[in-house]
Length: 128
Image 1 (tube, rainbow, N blue to C red):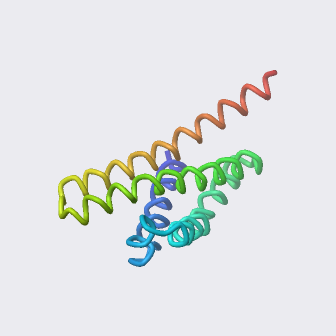
Image 2 (cartoon, one colour):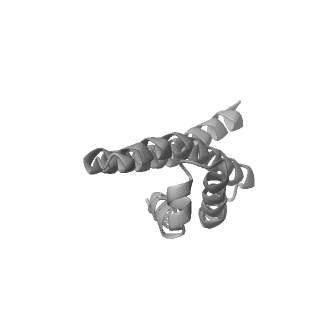
Image 3 (cartoon, helix red, strand yellow):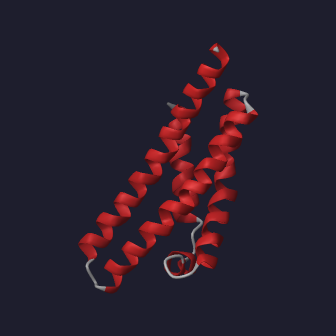
């Protein structure tokens, strides 16, 4: 349970607290700002990589999980930031916040699903 709490708290810090206003507004219009946001996300989320590695003792598992989720974060934000930006410009606050919520749901599902998928893959490769 503590692993998933750590994953979610660090994700919040990496995706919100350490995201500047320029990143938040620029990532929907510029790959430069999206990339800066994702690099920042990667640096902050390195804490989770260290936590997983320390608690599971498997460098390959922790590194794979971290790198996959950095790539997934880029792809998700590439799509969702354009949609949220559109709703913001239209002043459609209801759909803007629904989309922010959906963005976070997708990120959190990616984080948890990849964890279980990699653990399952690891177990299968050990048994084979």
